[in-house]
Every structure is written in structure tokens, then in C-alpha cells.
Length: 113
Length: 115
Image 1 (cartoon, chains in turn cyan, red):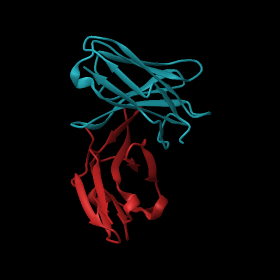
Image 2: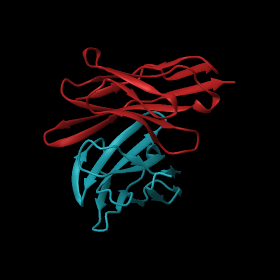
Image 3: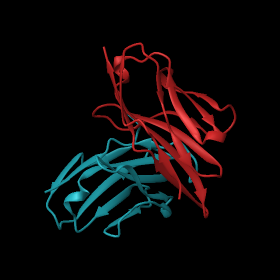
């Protein structure tokens, strides 16, 4: 158990819908990272927040957004969902803002029908 | 833009065989390197990491990796694999760019160990 929690575990929705994925970092960690893992693209870094502020951006689509709240939990919002958004979405956390070891959550499996 | 290449997509080995998984990255500056493992049905776990110092890094479960700067490589090795090593292995690189850190993962190598 890494100490990072993600909810829900599984999510099934339809195209065009909007969903919110939630992540709680390890106690004491200030950075939260979001990743998308799909069969064809592997593991893609989406975005990082550090202490409530956006810190780094990866291959995140404009339809996707994230935020980190004062209690340090984070939410990833996916809108106008397409079939290709079906994937495993991981959250990770680390202590600092820079080159720290990241600890991964169990992931949320999103299926878009 | 930085990239990470894992050339072996699927590796099948018998138990007790030696393992070497390749990881090459393209970035000329300072990098921090990681290997993660994802066992079937589980989340990513850190195997080992390199920030600085001794380029030969030892990780958990008997894994080690060697950072060769001149070759831009960080290959993962294990002298004798076990059936329980069956998993997917990801190499990751973190660099700084424009005051931000950027994280790039390789596409992963699926290792299947046959008893």
C-alpha cells in the first residue's frame, strides 16, 4: 500500500459525458501527479500540482483539467468524453516539487462506451 | 523534447535466467532516472532510482540498474529471475525545463517468466 488513494476504482460512462476522478496523496506529500495509461500509448504524464498550484504540464488534452485543493487532495476532470479516453488513470504523490520519488495510487479504470 | 525508449516490448524468460531491460533517453542535461514495476492487477511501484553518485544502483528484489551517461542509458538487470518477477517494467526520466520538472515514461516492457 503506497498511501495514495484514488476513487472510484472503476467508472463506466458514455461518450460526451463528464467525470471527476479523485486522488488523496500520502500524508505529508505536497505534489500530486496525474497519469494516463492506455494500451496504445503507454503511460503518459498529464499534469502535476504542488501545494495547490500547477507545477508541470504534460500531454493533457484541453478537455481535461485538474486542481489541487487546500487539503492537498486533487481532482482530475474529464469532459466531452470520447471512446479513446478509456484508460487507467493513475495519481502519484511526492514530498517536494522537484525530483522526488513518486508513489502511485491504485488507479481508476475509466471505460467510455 | 525529451523521450524515453524501451526497445523490448515483451520479454519471455525461464526461471533463473538473467535479465537485462534496455532504457535509453534523449536529453542532454541533468536527469533523474527511475524504474517502476507494475505487477498484474496492481499499481506502479518504485524499483530503484538514480539521482547522482554511484552509477550502479541497487533496488528492491535483487534488481539493479547502471546509468551510463555517455550512452544515455539506464538498463535494468537481475542475475536470476523468478516467476514472481512477471510484470510490466517502466523506465522514467525526470528533467528540469523552464523552471518546471517534466516526467516522461517509456512505453513499458512486459516480462513473462516461465517456471
